[in-house]
Length: 507
Image 1 (tube, helix red, strand yellow):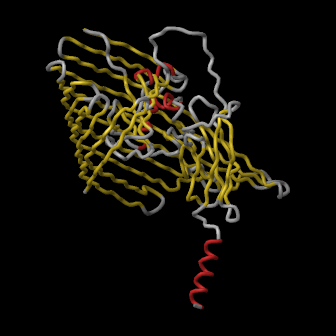
Image 2 (image 1 turned 180 degrees about the vertical axis):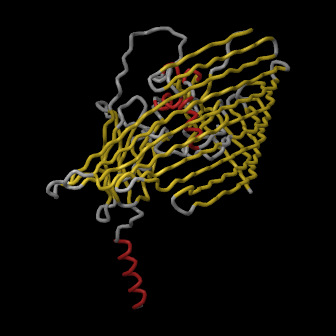
Image 3 (image 1 turned 60 degrees about the vertical axis):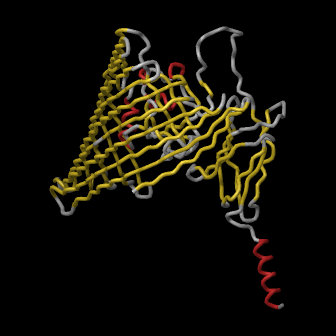
């Protein structure tokens, strides 16, 4: 009995202590003025220190939300709903003493929309809300004549940071697709491609925030599908486009041939840009009399050129069966020259130490992609099947030369280094998709995808003068990937319901 009493006392003590992992935040959102509960308000909770996403939810039919299993700390809370003014709070703090926080009822104001009256028009809205994605027409976005990066920056759902990396709902784990197919370019190569791809070639941007089981789960935050313009005229058609700016520009041309069962489409495009940057920093030690000084300066000059060539064909055997193929190739070459240096001066103003480091970098990549497929369509998106073979590769190389110049107290050349690197990714895949109707409003989707992915990378550092060291590193990674999915969907009145199952195996 004595041991039992001790155990009961210890249990009561543990239950009375606040848990660092059991904190929670709750609240409600209503429409300003009408005080009507707002359902579907997007709630994002971020760390105040680094803005990383911690939790995400949406309000229910009663306008309320609750975030559980949180740690104590300082957070930022953002709430947004289409057609309303977004709200951000930076005073969300959870402590051991008060681990539960109720933010109460907050109001969201309606964003005013200016209307000219009732008009009949065939033009589509800028934002089209579909059952599985939001569609934004490029021609109505502010950056329609700039580059793909600037176009994505103007999409309300997306964030593009200072380094031109795309994120959705606070996460950068986003899959970029081109015309419904995952881009073969990754990392810096993809960023450079979007930075120089003409926005005039883009018809619309589709944001899929909650992908179904059909898609690869690599982009956990969602999928951004960039759809390029396709030919609409019969016979021979084409277009020429030229963009010029103070930091870049370039021409592009498209040509199409559509006659009978055969459709051919292709074109070339190019873009260049140039950017110069300079930084100077002067610091004085006022504690010394007379004061000493320290001068830091740096300058960079970046130049890059981009070129692309692509083509496609469609051959219709009949009204339902089509053989198609695509091929594309892109090249990019970048050059970067930089200088970093400093000067130290004594109390008399004489330079006691001076140093400069010159760097010259080269970064080049190219990408080639080819697809061959067959599609049989009885009813679009409800009764169809397709088979597609695909291969792509996007090798890249980079070189960086660095030379140190010692100017004071004795002029001379310090260490001279050379860094060379190569990356050679490749992927081959086969994909089978089938959509079968169930009743008048339901459908069953199933499919299989097999892929072989291979990537080889090397990096070598050489010390050419003024020191020792350096080394060579590299790796080869090969993966065989199999995946299958099954999705059941139906429409019940205004509600669209979908459930899916996905299985994967990789070696």
